[in-house]
Image (cartoon, rainbow, N blue to C red; front, top):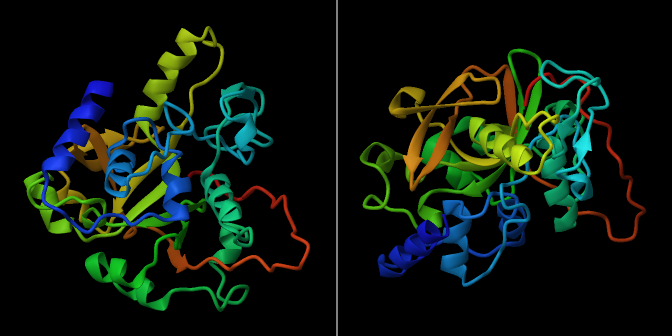
Length: 296
């Protein structure tokens, strides 16, 4: 894998200059939760001359109700049952979707965001919605968003999810020559980073648990990944799977499975913008877990 990363870095040096993902604290934090040699982390570092390291070599794993970064990779049981995490079983600890976004936000100096269900409420939070991003799709949606904006989702099943906007393939230096032909029309579509289902995480961490003699622990449902938004699912030629084994359309991108996030079947969703933390007011911490959430 290190040889692949070195080769990718060398190839990037030979490519014509492109508008890269400009250095930002949000990207520093969010991308650091990806696995080593992830192409988005490699490209971000190459284009900015930075050395943002993966905090966890295999990436930050998913754990139902996970909020504490210091406990990642420790054995743990969830505080409540869900469709796929049970209180009487032991898992490898990680963050859940809201645990990941809140961790990024707190380190950015933002107010710890509300529960996902309340973020979706226009009555509770009438002032943080991004109307243009909600009405647009594809390239126009990306133009309406800023790095770090949040996408809050309520699934048709009733569960909730949240993700962070991080730019586009073009903003990470990709062009028509450096992506598969079928991905080229979507170079300016929004990219999201979130902690969600991924079979790759299960496979990587299953091997890790075997190597470390922790076979009694259940590997994570998924982890922090990058996905592309608004692409028609039928346009993606490859299928990967989430933590439940459900097939998800994706593109092969430099050895990475770039999953498609499809909003068409969701019950509701909303793009929202962070609020800066008040400087002289005591912070309220320890937001309660999304008790209504049944799937990430």
